[in-house]
Image (cartoon, rainbow, N blue to C red; front, side, top):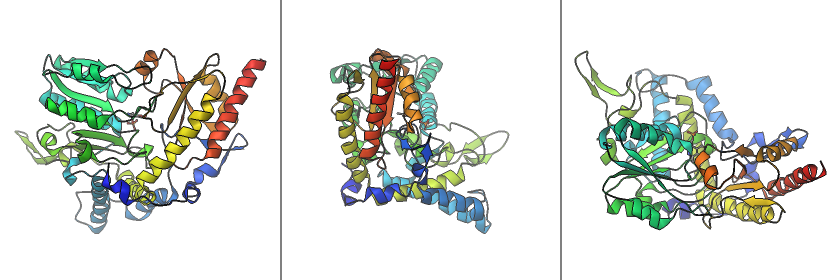
Length: 417
Ligand code: PLP
């Protein structure tokens, strides 16, 4: 799909790459750490931490406002990230890259600003049944404010959207489709390119929540023809507090500002205020400068590893982990789509997910348990919670083996008690 993907294909020594993540070499509870909570937040390579540290030690100044050298340097470094992001996701224009604090903030921006301008009473907002709360609640809020309605595309027992139901739900009242690219709770990869093409037949714009896709696969927003695409730095080896909203200029230029304050204005008087151009009109106040600069370094790092190499490596781990998990008596995988990325969500027939998570932690294995900010997904699959191991390219087959041994141990503890 993305041209960048083929360009970067090469042989990568992932063990050397893993060495760049010092956090992974520690012991937890007397055992070497196995970190499998990457869907919540992934780890940071030394060079990104060093870049952030260098900014704080030597380059700190506010951006966009100063004529002094330090401020100009900080501005250049901070704006350099915008160029890198543009190339990384192949956006047509640099102004289509808006800095936010993360996926949640990006989706709220669109729900609020696009909603103000383009969603009217009686309109419908279409989301899927397996969205993260960040792609549910902002839409419910705008629907309530505007007298619109949130409609839900159902999924089948594998966790795939039911195509015919999707098509049936699209109609002249649909103001926007908002759908995850990859489900954080199940790992399903939605067929977003096909979904967008279908929505565009009705001239309906589509927002893609890419929080779990951009870290794991090459993404090309022009190839997808996404109207909005949201993601977070901290899930892709970058810093917390920083994220991206990509939006097509045709929409961004018509959307009102989301927050008011410094930097987002053109002229201010008590009688009238006019606004800065896109993207700055959406970026009020002093931004997280260090995180933005650090994110630029993160992108350089990911590009050097190669997003297609990352996708390939994680697919191998996912297939291996799926087979191993399936071989354990009493374990059921939740989310069995043919198209999955980096997530192994599972339940045991008589041990609660939280107990599995606790026993794994005793063995130095970090996974996540609970509803994963996707309560409707849990409801759809009739489970209160799942245990979720989520992968990154720095994980190894050995990490999966430790996970499997850990689960077997948890089962034997419960069977003996
Ligand atoms: N969307 C998905 C699919 C996610 O997995 C997450 C986080 O887990 C979010 C949105 C929210 O991301 P953030 O907390 O970085 O804003």
